[in-house]
Image (cartoon, rainbow, N blue to C red; front, side, top):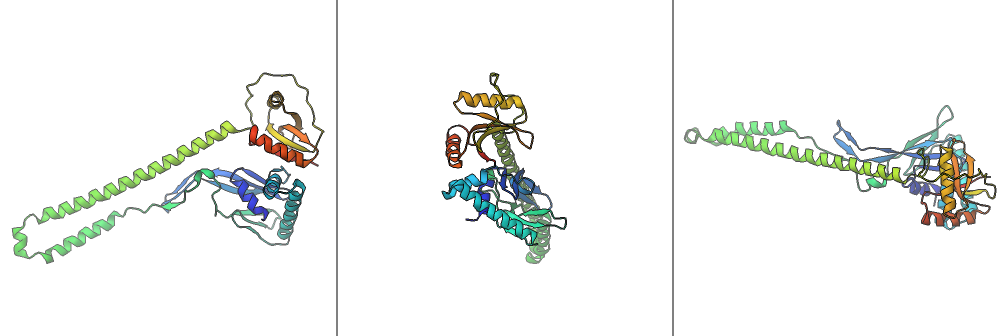
Length: 314
């Protein structure tokens, strides 16, 4: 399968999918929207964007392809590298790249890569089964015209002599108007309650997901970790080029405490230093061979942290 298939699968689970030496596809949560003009409701979704500056290999796409296809890390890396070179060549030649369910890419006059999302798929798992719908407006003028036509037709149906005897005809007219008004108001009330309930459910679902993400977050944490402070030497890992990342922290103290936690659990944890984003990286372990690193990464995802990922450096 083409690499865009694996990019689609990862966009459901992650907010950033990097294609090495090409760029990164980013997702940003967008809340539900009600178009007051078109009377259309749009459910929450993930809005996709592209950043060509984020092109360093973080190991996510390569590891996922290697595991899915049953190939080695080097074989998967070669496939992605070939595809990214082909995409770059097509763009530089003035061609437009179409990724069916993701979007299209092209180069503008300034030589910058432009991206337009396709919006065919909603990559937000919590919005599964939800689709946009149009709420038809209640046209009260329509019922008014029907009543006026009814008033015009009644005198031709009933003879003058019969109208005089049946003096209750005006009451019938007013009863019909009241009945129509009552049914119209009831329909509007039910529609309003239904729309309000749907909107409340969407907001509550969004709040629950945000709370869950905050509780499960392991990266970019700025709050001090609740763990006894241990005096540990700063170790620069040099035993391998394939590192299983446990976390990246803005505060050095949090990185030291995370490393202490992992060592208590029995991991050969190490401090990798500061990356180009100014974050202190901590690794579970490092390996010379990528096969060993991938095997250990699967074990850690199952037993300790599903958010662990592989960083391979030259």
